[in-house]
Length: 149
Image (cartoon, rainbow, N blue to C red; front, side, top):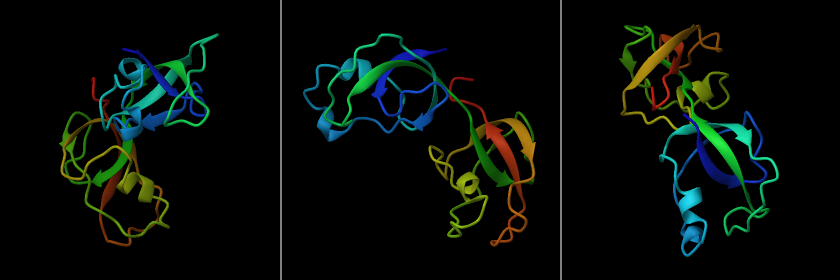
């Protein structure tokens, strides 16, 4: 189900994804608060449509203003412990990883996923992008279901 919201004009492109982080201190007193702050904090969204002929509105957070877009919550790719990882089950991340140069790091610490929370696995994607886990973890790349599924 899509939701109409306002995002920074630099981000307002169909297919762009972001994690909604909530209200900024600069939002206080803004007349567009109800149109902007209508998403769920910590959820990843994909812009499905940019409103044609939408007016660019001034914003204290986004230097080039904000535009109206339609967004939908989306799942997130993540590496989880391979043991008991199957579609339909719940899993959590294996834990923090200091190896930021690893090709799997973005999936071991994905933006918008909390380490202590369990997430429903929508799909098993297979082997992680790394050849060898430097923490000797046996991981599987999965897609977590979006929050509305």
